Length: 471
Ligand SMILES: Nc1ncnc2c1ncn2[C@@H]1O[C@H](COP(=O)(O)OP(=O)(O)OP(=O)(O)O)[C@@H](O)[C@H]1O
Ligand SMILES: [Mg+2]
Figure 1: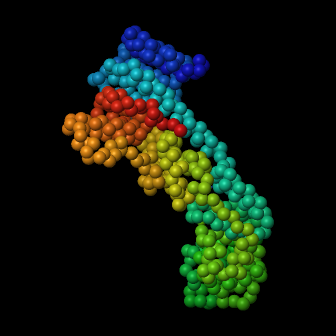
Figure 2 (figure 1 turned 90 degrees about the vertical axis):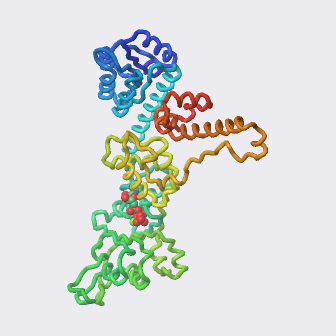
Figure 3 (figure 1 turned 45 degrees about the vertical axis):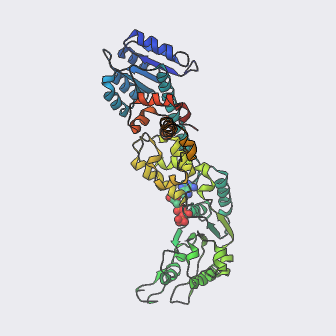
């Protein structure tokens, strides 16, 4: 693009066609022409073009050969095939091989300009997607916690600040916000990093078991206690004990936990001998502990003992600016290297979704989309449907309520024509919205020839440019 204009290579064995293309495209683009496929290949080996417009039937190397060579050498270059009516099926086939679109002869100059403009737009989007991928791969992380939003950066700073102190930390936040990651980060940032990190989910254990899990038990302390066993407090000695879902602890165990924290010693179930433990406790809960206290479900003394510092992990919807990079990061881990990213609409669906399950839900949504996507980019249809419910585009029909007398005042033909015109315009608008101005795909859905759709769009003044993808 040395001239500043995008570069277009036109390949056709008919001199007059080359002239026609040069006339149509010459103002907006730097046009180079090649009279046959072989010369095109020679040019392509010497330099890059943004778009290649090539005839299909040519002596020597045909349009498909040119397409394959372009895609092999410079996958970024978009290829538009020019085809006679008879080879349209082959041209459609070629789209699967990477051609951007085709022009069927005879064509409108407008159509040529439009298809080249859209090919360039598509190329820009691919580059954007790669830019996003590159930024995602460079995204800094705090022990696995990723995000550049001010909300998360503030959280990281606070975690880093309290990590080295011996304070008990309570991590709060909705499910999937990274509480466990944060607990591990606290451990790794602390002087205890080389000692054990022991995690226990207090909500997952039956009440009878929690106590012996935490504090251990003596041989014969209860039925089934065939041997003496150290508890998790002892296992975590010197390190960090992560009490996940601490709000779910049964009240009697809360009493014992409070005492253990206070005295820095525990007693195994069935013994009276105290064991000194040096453990830093990090607790997490998705509950509002203060509210649990007032409801009598959480002991006030334990609440105050734990609550040295509370760090609240922000919900994903409070830091939506992190969503594109996180999504890209998770896509990179999805083992579909051929997927280059997301379409702008897919990204918008992701950034707009409510995310009650936060980062975990995003991770799952991206993994699922990556598994079903046909590529090259993830489209909204690949995403779990529950994400889209937040913003289903609604067509405001222009045929709103019409007073009966107004309708009845007109002759039948006129009334019906008018309604039909309005409905047609609404339909075409919705169709263009759905396919982002891509007439080829829209025509397929509409069940009509692309040329007919073009005519209809023109007739109703619906401009494809207005629906092009982008921000
Ligand atoms: N900021 C983040 N960057 C990257 N991955 C994250 C981030 N936050 C969470 N995750 C990922 O999301 C998933 C859920 O995180 P984690 O288990 O830490 O959440 P949680 O708050 O403990 O959730 P729950 O309350 O459901 O236990 C994990 O796979 C984790 O790796
Ligand atoms: Mg968790």
